[in-house]
Image (cartoon, rainbow, N blue to C red):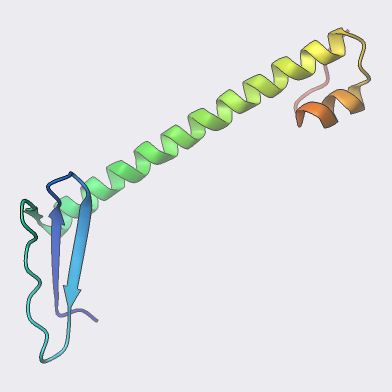
Length: 98
């Protein structure tokens, strides 16, 4: 287990940490231009980044589902059989009403 952990934000804005352990380990040095963070600040910033990534992923999934539904509806409206329209679009939602 690390004896010392240094938490920081790099000059470019990335979060980072360095750990040192053992009897001969020296404490990690702060890279040039970096800002030291407490463990709590680091974990809070990391949680915010992870939440933003999850929100973005959720938005992408929702947009994809909307596109699949629109494509499925268009195929069904043009007379394509339901099974074929589903296979072509990957749509798994409720059946289109004709």
